[in-house]
Every structure is written in structure tokens, then in C-alpha cells.
Image (cartoon, rainbow, N blue to C red; front, top):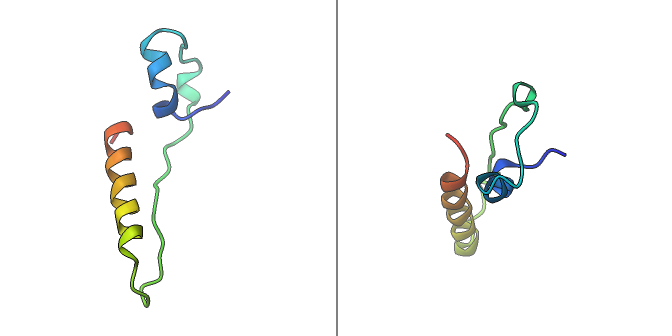
Length: 62
């Protein structure tokens, strides 16, 4: 079953899971945040975007 690496990383680190078919791994896709420019974005939305950005930056390969 295909799972994001950041979800299974702890199990991989403990050798509870092993990677198979590495040459056939899917190509990483970009992640974007889309919001209307003509409206003011709520501070809570910006806080969420910053939180997700920081969280993913530390967990996903560059």
C-alpha cells in the first residue's frame, strides 16, 4: 500500500516497514495554497498556511 513517507517514517526508522519497488515510486507533486486575491485573508488562514508550511518543510524532502 502506498503511504506518504512522512507518515510511515517512524516505522521505517524502527525497521517495522521496508521500502519496496523504490524505482517505481511516484513523482513528488507540488503543493499549493489557493485563495482569492480580491478578499482579505483572515489571520487564522495565514496562521494555518504558515503552520502547514513549517510542518511540511521539516518532514518532506526538498
